[in-house]
Structure formats: C-alpha cells, structure tokens
Length: 478
Image (cartoon, rainbow, N blue to C red; front, side, top):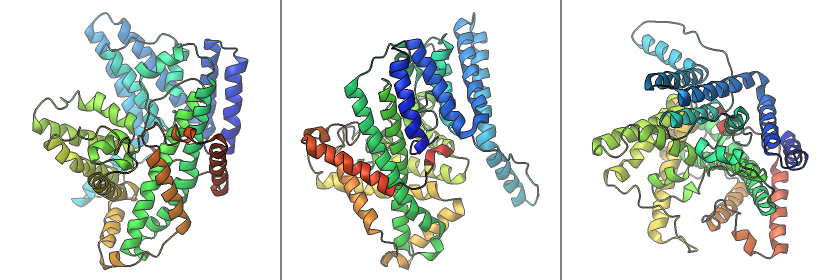
C-alpha cells in the first residue's frame, strides 16, 4: 500500500477513527489496533513476507528477554550473536546473495574459469533493511546494557512494525519510540493539524516534484547516448531533486501520519541541499541512518579517538557500508566511496563541525561565501547521484564521459519549462521554511487565514492535477 494511493487515503481515516473513538482511549486496545493495522498495511504489498516480519520480530523479542535474563556473560553473548547472525543472514540472502554469487562468477571468468552461478529468483521483501535495523539496534542496546528487554510482545511488535515507518523509515530506536508506545495518548487537535500539514507537504514533494522530475530523469538516463552533455547534466539534476522529493516526501508523510496517532518519529531530513559542505549534508540527509551507523558502527570501531589514520579508516568503512546498505550493486559502493572522499578534507582539517546551524539563520538571503559553498556542495552531490541512479558501473561511466564532451557547451535539448517553475517555487518555499522541522510548519501560520487556506488549496489542486498512476517510492527497493 503506497502513501500516494487511493487505498491509503481510505485506510488512514478508518484507522484514525477507530484509534481515537472505538478504543475509547484504552492504551492496550490502541496498540493492538496499531499492530493489526500495520500488519494489514504490510500484507497489502505481499502477504507472504508478513511471516518474515513476524519471525524477525519474534526472534529479537525472545533473544532480548534471554539476554536480559542471562546468568552470565557467555549466555548473554550467545543469544546476542544468535539474533545478529539470523537477522544479517536473512538480509544477506534476500538482498545480497545474488550480488556475491554473480561477482564471484565474474571474478572467476576474468581468470578463465567459466561458471554459471545459481541465483535466487525472489522479490526483495519491502522494508527489510529498515525493520532489520530496528531489531539490530534493539538487541545491541540490550547487550550493551543501555535498555532492558521489553516483556510486552504487543508493544515491542508495534515498535518494529508501526506502519508509517515500516517500509522506508525513519529507522527508529527503542529508547525513543517504545516509551511513546507505552504511554497513554490523548488526542491533540493542534498536533493532528500539524501532522496533516506535513502530510500535505510530503505529498507535494512526492507527486509534484519527485514524480515529475522522474519522468525526465528516467528519459535522459535510459537514453543517455542520444543526448548532449548539457542535457545529461540536467538529467542528473532532475534525479537529484527526484530522490530528495521522493524520500523526504515519504518521511514527511510518515512523520505527519504518526503525529495523527500522538506519536513523534525521528526527523529524517533537514533541508540537506542547503548544506555548505558534505559533513553538513550528511547531518541533514537520511538522518536516522547516518546516526545509526555513527552509533552502532563508527563509534564501536573507535570513532575519532584513535588518531587521524583511524578516523579516515572508520569514515571510509561507514560510507562504504552505507553505500552497500542501499543496494547490492557496485554503483552504490562507488557512491559511498565518493562521499567518503568528499568528506575527507573536513576530517583531516577538523572542520566537519563548522556548520551546525542552518545556513543564514534569521536572514532572508545567504552571504556570497555561503552561497558559493552551497553551490559547490550541491554540484558534488549531483555528481555522486549519477552513480546512485545508474544501472551499473558501465552505465555510470558512459554517462559521465558523455557529459564531459564537447556537447557540454551546447544548449540542452530537454527544457521542461513548467517543471523549472515548479522547482523554483519548491526551492523558495523550502528556503523560507528551512529553520523549521519541515517547510510548512510555522511560517505559513503567520499569513492571514484566508491567504493561508488559499495556499493549502493551491497545493491540493496541484497534487491532484499532477497525480497519475501510483509511483512507488525509490527507497522501497532498499
């Protein structure tokens, strides 16, 4: 079930009404309803993989209890590694087995040994990377004595499978979400209205920005040999806005939906394309994943405490792993490697914490230095996204080589004027709302009510005008 589908438009109000009225404020009934609704939501995609989600939930629930009740460290370690091994095995089989099998066969072929690898003909279970990371953080926190195991199976299951975040995040922590699930929730009108406003903006990002950019990005990437270098640059820029509108739009809808049920999810985006360096970009892009790798991989590896060589090594490790997390393709690994290279000057010269506040805070416009820094960071990001979008390394290299040809100086052959206008309006709205949690959070409230509601109606009309077939979110494949 997609957030931008008619099915979800029917599903959400029904669950909302049952949640606040049929349960009569009973916390246990509310959580049961959320769990049943979440399983139904997931089963609408493919009911067979619902059993994998339930198995993963049972595994981490029981191993968590076993770790908490363990009499000695050896027993605790056994249950910990059982959970880690099984979770990573499922992720490895479904997501990475074919990649390793085909890469191994290719390596043998290079030395003259020809083999036909056996590959799995299976669909990747949607959301497996996200709910697996939910479970991994939970069992790691128990093992490190940061939290106690949750004994209420319903509460724990809602933490893993809460439908707004189930298939594409944000990646939640038990320390943040479980206390909210266990706490009595009462309806808050202002919170619900704020949630609807964020859902509206998320749908605008997805339907109006991402899907329209996707049309041209796909056209250009799929037929790169037919276009000039200047047109290929536009294609990369269109994809840059496509993936941001698509993924941050999903996150906005997820956060807004959760707020309708009295639950606050972790923020996942903070206007990343206004970043002044790559370090700032990664503090603002897919925040829940970046912080997950920092807490559960970078810091355990030694973080920044072991000298410059260890900082460089650990940075490359988390970016390469992050790339591989996104998909079983060398293009994602190169994308991660590029971002590690980009961030190296900040690591080496210890400037990675220079830009903690949003750019031009309290001002209408940035100064020339900030504007130049934003432009450079954006260009580096656009270049890296080419590898993320390309089908394989050959596609990426051919695309890039075509960019850096004489045709780069020609006029682009694809010039969608309406899309340029939409992107300009989008950037302006995001810019003036950049100091908030999302673009429409506060600044629109300062506008007179008639104008404000007129603005909302324009957004709704624009969404319906551009809505066509239901376009799957990009991160469903991860």
